[in-house]
Amino acid sequence: MGVVLRNLQKVVPLRRARLRRDVDTLRHILGVHKFDLGVICVDNNRIQQINNIYRKKNVPTDVLSFPFYEDLRPGKLPCPLHRDELNLGDIFLGVEFVMKQCQEESLDLHGALTVITAHGICHLLGYRHETEEEWTEMLQRESYILSEYNRLTGTSGAPDEEMHSGEVTVTVTAALWCLLLLFV
Image (cartoon, rainbow, N blue to C red; front, side):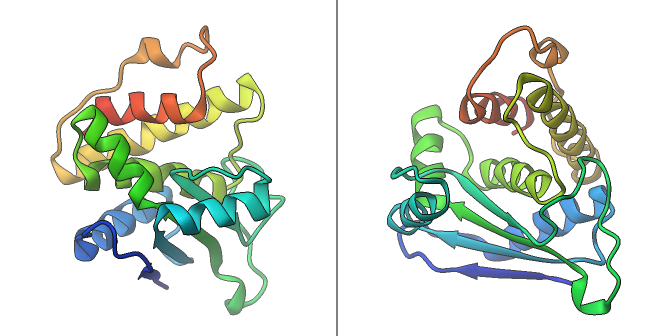
């Protein structure tokens, strides 16, 4: 199965081949390479519209995930009954939003998109961050994914285990950017 990668924005130049390769590596790490996955890159206007419609938040964001399996427990892979159910869902990447964050923090856009995509895939696999316990579980999973990504691709960066202690409650975006600083 494969990745459907669509770039529906013209604001930020993207290296689609690299993003596709990174998404394939993430799928391999998670053991979901037999499942289809949609990755749609959009600008701030489009991600804001989607965020407003589905989350009632009228602001742009970095990533929105729409799982095919809505009741999946974190860490459990889907058990499709039919071939046409080999689908994880779709991830919308707010690449303009991410680019602005990268410019403010002097970070690499494509590295940031890899971290944000890992976060989106975790949502497709049932991970949530509505409570501190859920957030800690998701952050640990993302840390593992990005450590494996670094190992497989030869990129540098090591996780800061103190960041994962769960003693401090931070916003999702802030924590993702902390992960990004560690792994890119």
